[in-house]
Amino acid sequence: MSEPAPVLAVVGGGQLARMMAQPAIALGLPLRLLAEAEGVSAAQVIPDHRVGDHRDLDDLRALTAGCAAVTFDHEHVPTAHLHALAADGLAVRPGPDALVHAQDKAVMRARLTAMGVPCPRHLLLGEDAGPDDVAAFGFPCVLKTTRGGYDGKGVWVVRSAADCDEPFAAARESGVALLAEELVDFRRELSALVARSPSGQAAAYPVVASTQQDGICLEVVAPAPDLDPDLATHAQQVALRIAGELDVTGILAVELFERRDGRILVNELAMRPHNTGHWTQDGAVTSQFENHLRAVMDLPLGSPQARERWTVMVNILGAPERDGEPVGRLYDGFPHAMARDPRLRVHLYGKDLRPGRKVGHVNAYGDDLEDCLERARHAAAWFRGDLGNESE
Ligand code: ADP
Image: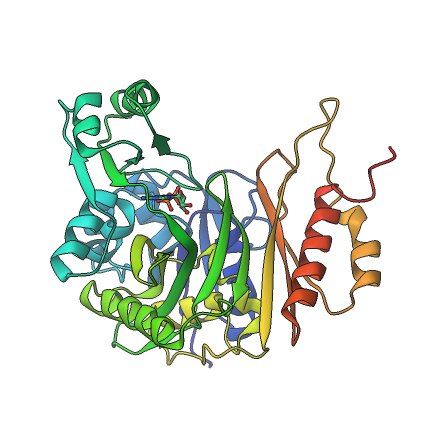
């Protein structure tokens, strides 16, 4: 009789869990999913799924019963529940003491500062704080919710006391503290991704450059063009050191600002596959999704090396509606996109088009960066409906 395959539980039914399913198939690793609702992105492709609430400990216990380990599509499982699951004897990967640094920006800033890792100047605003405290910190600056933000939601650039009204109102409503940060005048944003296993093996991906629009990742170029090799190595070492000291398991993404003087500051941490690592699906020997699975199952990691000179990833974001109708053409866009560029790689998430929503991405790779950029941007614009609709 053959041995039964260990089952990995995944909390959260978004596209990251969906994209974990591909390498899970190849590795023969069964996944069991906790989905927010029937039909969400990952539930479409993971047959062993149940609908439940990631904030409910009973749902988490029911999901993980008999599983070898649990990992996550997002950072929103309450830290206390993660401790409870770990106390039950479950392998929680990443563990609560690591994950809290991706859940709470105040905890993350305090820890990184204590480690001597360069961060933007910052100030945690207590319950009684108000716009005067922000003024004393100095305008312009950035206010951020310490918990629960994503894709730029919960991040405000404030230039005056009046600008502080919205963030303070949001903080009162949610009961979550705000963090003030200097507005960094960065040259560009970089991302250093590493995978780390519980036994301590780690692998660092090439450092990439990312472009955001309204706080949402739009494009990634791997490797970051014209990056000083010493700075690239330094960024990888910072990421490896954070992963080691925080005892991260799985993928750690360290979002960085490259300052105009060539120094780097850490913006934030994510402990799961990350949008700035989607290029690895087609451009690296081992994708971030596969290395996340290998790491959380404590298997030897695969090579993070690039397979191609350049890989460009462009997200497909839902365009603004026209006459109340979505304008994109996801599946209808295949014939043009595929015929125009047989080397293009398309990844759709099974999501309905909504303005600003990430519904997929494309990867284009090759020896010529300008060509990769043109191909990936053209394809993404085509799927969004920004091209070819002009005369309609
Ligand atoms: P989220 O948790 O929503 O991803 P981030 O902290 O990554 O929030 O902020 C989203 C984006 O806002 C960043 O990618 C960056 O473009 C911008 N941003 C965040 N913090 C700062 C800062 N201190 N200075 C300048 N820009 C910032």
